[in-house]
Length: 341
Image (tube, rainbow, N blue to C red; front, side):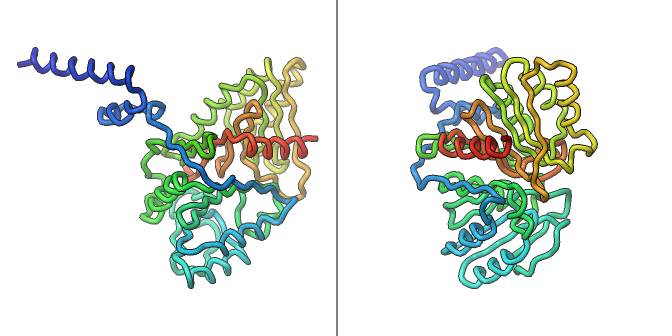
């Protein structure tokens, strides 16, 4: 009996191996039943939609853009927001009279007068996303407060049924009070207008590891704009990469003295080894430099609410978007170049 069971197992495994070789597009469905991570084997859905929109403050009024985004809601608006201020709070209340408006916010920020609101009771719910009518996702680094438009921030509106579904699933976990306890994404990618978009949620998707892998793949250049940057593994990787390719970054000036901030360590490495192609700058905004952006090879942009820090990876609820759309990447690259120069 043991021999037959072993033979049966080997036969099944052989069949799966043949399928993987001959039909790689369906192997995700087969292997997943064995509990093996086969995300790369899953077919990537394709979708055509309106081009995404990207905004940067303080050059424009992000609050006004966000109010217009809310105004266009027809049936549903679900938001996970770290903080909310006026006039956004009042606009959400007004819209809740004609649409299903639900808001989840962090408990460390002040309360808002919206009936359908829940608070995260542990750590930080640090997201800044909304899903409108199951189609238009707003995300980025912008908190909808008065100060949010004065800070250096970025915001995206991505039109996608598929990505809206991913964000909706994350929101429903929050709504069920499953903070930091959600399921990891089985297939986080979509080919939107022929360009790859990928979304991850922390801590369940191990966002720090995802970003590290992208940085590791850099062959031409790395650029970054960060509010809080404390990861030692990233620091070591950036130093190593700067031996071969240019690595340029902008830091929030008020954070460089925080514990574990890597700015001074990178500068020290540059001073000790002038051949490193490492160029750093402190922001010049009298308010905050609030971006959480990496640009790799001027071909990939990483954005969202995720600061490269231990807290963001392990303790906070965050979201991360990885984009290969050359138009969007170009906009982020242009913003970086303007700020860096």
